[in-house]
Image (tube, rainbow, N blue to C red):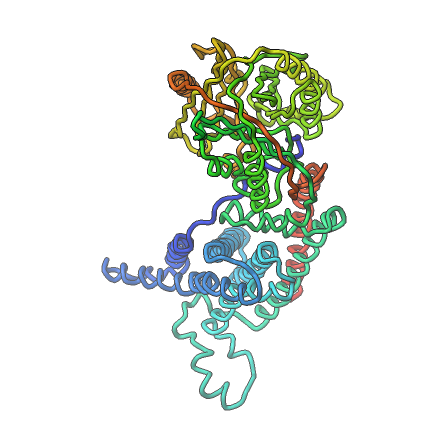
Length: 633
């Protein structure tokens, strides 16, 4: 992950899960009641406590009627109307948006009342502020509806205008505005008149609304709609020019995934993706009778981008397929090799199944070897004619190893004499999201040559190493830690491989990288093994709303150390003779594509920066025009 990608991921902290619709409506009801008591002070002349209480209740009811009714109508109707028009607003989003509109109007009226009191402005100023507030509610709803439902401006206007239209209708009827309108005819002056003029039931504060207020409301709504259109067109243009897609598609999918758990974001990624051929390597261990005991599976993709979107939950999917205890380490691939949809995982699993069926098992293996070259360190072990290599740059900081670098390291290990190789990135030491490049190992870098050199030497030493009888012991603890604490559903898994008197331990933690120094601390606490490495799966189910949530950031290091030590001891006690073998298959999947992730992140960050400034400029401009219209009318 680069700095630009981390900045984009950090934006997720501003997205929250929409509360249930009834919670939003309950808050709106309470706010409306308080507004009614504060605005309609009918209890001023009451003397008896019971009479005063009744009047207060009446004031609260009036607040509910005039303030909350538009909210609940908008909350109920927006979902149905929007979906009828082809949108996808959920009840939770609809209720939250309606509550936001109510709070916006209340805030505008409170500010207008304070300003009016300080400056000495009368009731007409409050009415003018109310018109601006209702038009602002329409503008906010229009922006959100267009972003979430991806509707055109004319179509989005219909569900977006519900709350403003209902509030305006109530004000028109109970404010007595119809008295100023000369429609005429037996229908309007006869049977409908009692329903169009209900001033006797309205509080005195609502009287004085004139037709100009409603005409002004229509003009301001049209003006604000134009502002929303210009704003969206301005921030959308770079996306269409660079990627041929709309930023609204990305925004809708991003909010839908984080706030509602939907998979709309995958639809956006599918439009950007490109096909790639990736190896899927399987190292399996079975008891002499044929029962599988453990299986290492490494598809050469990146388990991202977030949550369960794309390949974010690949480790868990792999674990479900294995007959034995599954070990899905992190591959040497970066964010450009994120799968665009979860459906692509099926192709990886099918390739893993084919590779597993082709494995030739052998009862012997070589002892584990540790090779260092520059900053890179590789722990390697040969099983039959294939080899397992685990790379790390600890105690230095590193994030993902580029696909091309890993593929070259794999080729060099095979050139050293191995028939096949499973090259895993331990992904076990990083300092979060600080720094310019966050430790990404790219082609041509010093670290890339260190890794290639270490893999080459490890391959040579494994090929030359003596074979010994192979034994394997495993252990697993799901743990009580959660993804929010940096630990995924696979917990902590340990495989101890014994060849003769030499033992090698592989500790796999279902998380995304590790806090600096934690890997060395865990290795230093292990007893009874001659070589060991700690790996993480790089699962992105721990990164739904946080760009970084590394192993050890939220959990006690002493507890993790004790757990790993106990599991290694259990695995040593579980040692038994096994056979092992390794095979690979290739499969075609759709991934983000070369440099696409960086381009997407850079464009998104630029859109946020420029969009914020442009939003302020548009808001100031439309408010200035609104003020001018209020003065002129």
